[in-house]
Structure formats: C-alpha cells, structure tokens
Image (cartoon, rainbow over all chains, first blue to last red):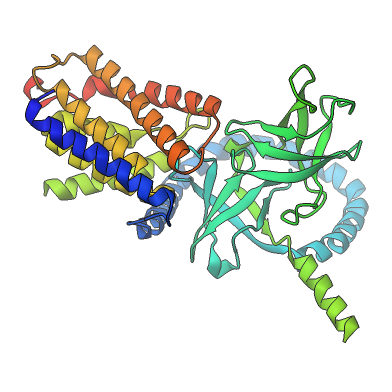
Length: 276
Length: 150
C-alpha cells in the first residue's frame, strides 16, 4: 500500500463510520432521494421500448403454433360451450354478487411490477402505481393465489412492494384447518417461517396458512401458503415451521392492491351514524 | 465527456441491476463499476468514483447514507492495486480479485447496516446473496484490465 495514500484511506474510513454513527441516532440523510423516481421512470421507458420492439417478433413466432393449437381448441370448445354456457352464466352472476362487496370496499387498483427494488438485500418490487392512483403506505397486495406483501413506500407515480419473504415482513396468521393462530415472517429466502405454534399442535405438511386479521394490517382469510416442513426437534416451546408461499416471487407480474382499512372505516362510519 | 460517460454507465448499471436476477438475487454490478474505477483511475480516482457510486446506491436503496459509500470506496481503493506494482494483473487474478472485492463489499454493507441500523436480511440469505453476486461478477474480472496491460 503506498504510504502517502494511507492517511487518505484512514480519513475516508473514519468519515464514513462517523457519518453512519451520526445517522444511527438521528434521522437518516438521503441526499439523492429524487434519483429513485428518475430511475423508476427509466425502468418504465425501458419496459415500453422492450415491449414495442419484441412484441411483433413474438407475435410472428407464436402465430403458427397458435394457429394449430387454436383450431384444435376451437373444435373442443364449441362442443363444450353449450354445456358450460348455462353454468358459466350462473357462475358469473354469483361471482359478481360476491366480488362486488369486496371490490367496492377494499379494491384500490391493479399494478404492474416494473423492476426489483434498488436495495439488493431486501425483497422489494417496484410497482407502476403510486399516490395519484390512490395507493398509500401499508396497503395490502394480493394476486389470485393469495397474499404477496404490503406497500412499504409510495411516491406520486410509483410504489414499493415489500414481499412476504422479506425479513422485515410479519403478519398475524391462522392455520386454516386447526384455526391455530401464529405469526408468519419472511426469511430473506424463498420460504417463510411460521412462529409461535406450540409443540402439542399436530401439523401436517400441506396445511394451508391464511391471514387472521388480528394484526389490523391485513384483511382476514387471505391465503398465504402451505406448510412445507415441520421440525419439532428444535429448542424452545414452539415448533420450527417452514411455509412456502402460494405466489412465487419470481413469477409476480401483476397484483391487485386493496385497502385493508376500508371495511373498518365503513363499519365505523355506520356505527357513528347509528349513534347520531 | 468522460464524466458524462461515467454518469451514463452508472445509470445504465442501476437499470440493469434492477431488471435481472439469478436465483432471485439481484447482481452487484455497482461493485464491478467501483472495481473498474480503481483499476483504471488509481487510488484517488477509485476511492472518489467508488464513493460516488456508493452514495447513489445508498440514496436509491432508501436506507441511510454510508454503508455503500464506505464499501464501494474501499473496493475502488483496493482494486487500484491491480494496476500498480503490488500485483501483476492476469485474467485469473482479475476474476479472483473481483470476486473477493464483491464479497468484501457485500460483507461491509451487511455488517454496517446491521450495526448502525437494522439487519437487512438473515445471515443465511446474506451468505447466499454474497456467493451468487461474487460468482456473477467473477467472469467480468477477466475483461476489466488495467491500462498498461492493454
């Protein structure tokens, strides 16, 4: 190591450590926060350019294959169509009836994943919807398979989604079959950990885990994943349970954002109305 | 012109980093950039460009300022030894150096964030992320060579 550069190196290390020590007891300094928005804009541009360039080629390649497949499928579907028509209409009516309540009170918007978060250590995805679309912090993100995570940060046009596999994610849950309550936490890897399930609880691999709603953060009854490993040999009063989420982080493209507090607000509003 | 080119490369690196992943792990190309700055510009250039990249990464990651500033600055500084009389650059040494410096970078960020703020991920996940990132970066060490060897 050159001797004349040594003081510079030490000065640099001391300055960096000093800066971190200063921030550890005060508010964090974020010098280029605006860059995050700029970077997200670039991600959106790259996405649209990529789509416009690749989509014609994709269409060409898929057309031939698609044609053959569709001809076979059309024959089959025509036959099935008659049978399903009646059931489909009934299903549609019932589904609309059921989902109307959910949609009206909790559904906020659908969002596309445009990038992974800049922080390599966290399991965060960047979404293309923000404050201007009605998204706020702590809202719940779901797909048709189940819970994906919660909104951890919002700007005007973008938001950050903290995935349920992140180490900083926790939610109150319940085992669907036995109704036993617990807490699910991320591990930083692809699996989650189910905590506070006592040893006497008889668990099976494949048991479904759903949100309990007791944490007032997530609505009740959203599927999260299934028990993939149970270890009763560990120390302490609780079992060591591994849960595999239904939604694979690498496959998430679109999500729905819901407001878990909306129902409560409505109920609160109604009860206020009754009081008056 | 050089500064503009560096700015474009840094922006491009952050875009690439946010769009690709291997085994659900984002690559650490900013560490490669800091390494390259040190290899081409020497101790001073390495430390300054590395710190600059680190400050941007800290700001983008939404945490506090410092971990990446320190780690990338040190990567920039120590990678400058590849172009001096301390080491004689070979493609193999380049690959080893970039892997080791990526691991050092990851370790420094993880330790300083755990110490001064909160643990960014579990230790098991951190080891996995560090290993994957240094493996991704290793081949790049073969191509990023000091000026005098070209």
